[in-house]
Every structure is written in structure tokens, then in C-alpha cells.
Length: 398
Image (spheres, rainbow, N blue to C red):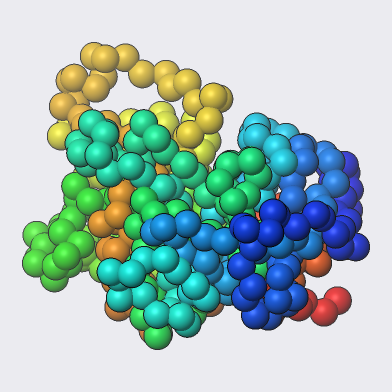
């Protein structure tokens, strides 16, 4: 099996951990947990056992929210961590894509109610530093990222592969509309919010109809048909772009992209007749593969906009000269994560289009926490763009 070849195993038996100190305990009745305990899957390092543990639920602090994880999805960054391509502190609870249900909070001046479903920014910000005030909160000097922190940070309940999550006071939250399902809603706070940030200079997300007439003669090339690419296609489609091309080497992914508005390209040489030199207004890189760059430079028009989202890893050196950029009058833009308004835009976009596109095809049937080994293996197979975990709710039968 793929996962075993990567020397990854998951312990299916629960390990009982010492509870937090008595004055840090909160007795809460939740599904799949005792009144003073909850379940989490702990990462101890690449190619080591993931361990399912039972531990006490901590008391939340001022401004914090205690949420029950309704659904979480496995992002590619988590897979890179698990197999050792990416380093994260240990021990930790991975997982940053999720939907939580409020079961307690200490936000007295908010309109939060027990039972509200929330999405949340993948990072917690201070809101006061130079970067936060310069509209780059995702680069906050005091940044904390969910699913990327060790268990000595805060309460330790920092990731979505668990029954519970503590949302910190600087985290932006958005209530989910009733028409947004948990499974696809879990992808909002990573993939879709990142893409609403990426397309922001190219369209008015607050009023997509406003620029449809202007955009009808525009062409975009989306490089990559993963979840970022599929969401990108849908965003450009709703903005009225006349031609949306999507390149990928995986035929199954291209078939999905077509359902979200794309004309698929697989690298066939004959496709050079479709995408001629200097024929594309916008190139959106979401593949994470640097070899797509020369093709993007070939087809982009003078004055074009080239956005980089997927190449966020060391093996990303590009072969380009300043002269090429200058002579074509190009704009290059790098996107890493997003700010609060992009999450709000993502929620609105998904709610407005949930009945228009087959979002349910993007996510696998749900696994429970004690099936994390199978869930990760399925994610590594790339059969689905996202694999879903529902603590206490999902259970895939084999």
C-alpha cells in the first residue's frame, strides 16, 4: 500500500493522557467524547506513528471559542508534513481546513450562539502590528497558524484532526449559511479564501456582475487543476471571462475543472494552436510545478498579470530575466494565504454558487478519526481533490 511504502502507520487504539490541571478543565457534553475528554490525532514526526489520544478539554480564555469539529479536510501541505517533505514542530495536531460548531465561548459582546457553524481564518493575528495595519495580517509579527503549532502552544488543541478546536481571540470567524454543507465548507478557509485573494485585483468580488461585460473578451490560463485551480476556474467563470483554459497532466482532474467552467489542456503540442503566443490576459499558477512557467511566459500578453500561488516550496527557481518582464510590461504577484475579507468573500461566493457547480464531487466520503490511516492513504492517491474527516460522524465502510 502507498502509505506503508512511505513508512506511515496509524495507531487505532486510543491512548489515555493525563488531564489538564483541574483549574483548566471545562466539562462539556459533546459527541464522541466523555464529559471531560475529547479525541485527537497527534503527529510525532515524519514516518512515525500518528497516535489517537483521549485528553481533557481545556478551559477557554477571554475572547476564545470552543468548537466541535464537524468536518475537516486533508490539505496537501499536511500530506507533505506527514511524509517528511515539510517540517513542522512536534508533537502537534495537524489540520487547518475545518468547520466548527460552537459549544462554548467567552466573547460576551459577540452575536455567537451555541450551535453556530463557523469557518475561521487559518491564522490568528494581533491586528495592531505594522503588517496587520498594512493589509497583510497573514504576515503578522505575532502570527499563529492552526494545524502548524506544537501542543505546548496555548491549550494544545490547535488543529482540526480532533473532536475539538480552540479558536483564539485574534482569529476572524464567519458564520456559515445553511446552504453550505460541512464537507465542502471545510475547504473554505484554505483553498477558496486563498483564491479569492489571488483574483482580487482582477475582479470585483463584491459585485461580479459589474465587470462581466468588460471581461467577456478576456482569456485566462489556469496552471493546475487541483482544488485551487478548480476554484480559480469557477471564480473566473462567474466574473464573465470569455475563455478559461486549465492545464494539468491528470485527465480526471481536468474533467472536474471542465464542470467548473474550464476548457482543458493536457500539454499536447497541438494545443499551441489554441493558445498562441501573447494571447492570454492572465496566468494563474496553482500547480506547484515550476516547469509550467515557460509556457505561461509564452502565452501571456504584454501588460498581462501573472499570479503565483502554488510554488510555495524551495524547488521553485524560475528561469526568467528582468528584460523579459520589463519588455512585456508584466505584473507578477505572489499570494500566500489571505486576510479576513477574503474569507468572507469565499463564504459568500460558495453560498451563491453551491447549487450551480458540483462541489460535492471535490470531496471524498467522510472518514472518522480512527480511520485516519485510510484517509491519509486515500489523500495520497489523489483520487479526490480533498479527503474529508468527520469526528464521530463519518465512517467509510470497506
